[in-house]
Amino acid sequence: MSYQEPLSQKAIAIAISDSPDMAALGLAPEHLRDAMAEIARHLLAMGARLVYGGDLRANGFTELLFELVARYRRDADLDDARPAVVNYLAWPIVVSKSAVELQGLAKELTGLAELHCLDRQGGELELDRLNDAGQPEMTDADWADSLTAMRDVLTDASDARVVLGGRVEGYKGRMPGIAEEALTALQAGQPLFLLGGFGGCARDVAALLGLAVQSSAPATWVGHDAFQPFNGSGLRNGLTAEENAVLARTVHVDEAVALVLRGLLRLAARPTGTA
Image (cartoon, rainbow, N blue to C red; front, side, top):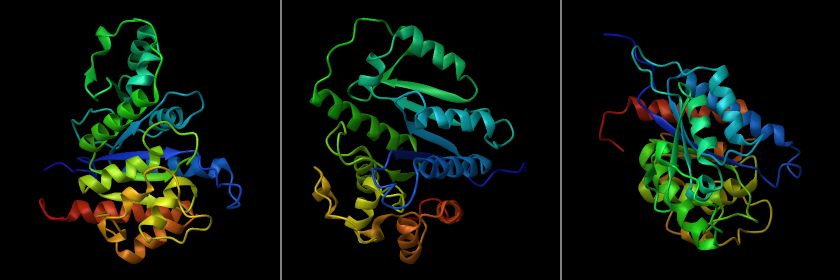
């Protein structure tokens, strides 16, 4: 029997966005990028595939993820040639790009990442059938429906979710993106890892679940009350309550990475069908 990497059959969704609290926490934006880089690097080393809902902004987190995958190849099992990243684009992002640009990017990423374009309902759009029919003006409802649909697709495509950072103002969608990522995971019973030490929406969610002390005003963003039915015991991520509290508060990247891996490895070791 050939050797199998411990997370080779797992797909882990990573949700990360700029945090407005970095300076107040004595941190710089680079700390958030370092956290993503280290989490991604260790997951790839254990054979996991990374699932991400990107927006393709220059110098953004999507670009960083592609750079990481090019530098740190996924340690896949023998005969497993699947790309390391599965990147989903919500409908408003798709229609803001030309078909030639998206097709060229997909070709450029061959072997590194799968690029999936979604329609408003989260259905798959075939890359070779995209056409430039003009860029329709996006309404708030268009953005909300499309982003929610994309996050449902991400949940179906992944086995666990890691969230950190996240703005709580100026977002598009029904609620802050990191909040909806976390809420979708909780509602689906998907293992969720909350890294709240870098502030932003992830810290708000951790506080709402009783895992961290809110260091500023309580969350008032639209949708925060949707977390009322949940608490820190519903994360289903393989960590103890004490470990989740540490993960929700730590600003040390190494400690956060170690806890995420510990939870995933515990889950992987459980017999199939157990919670």
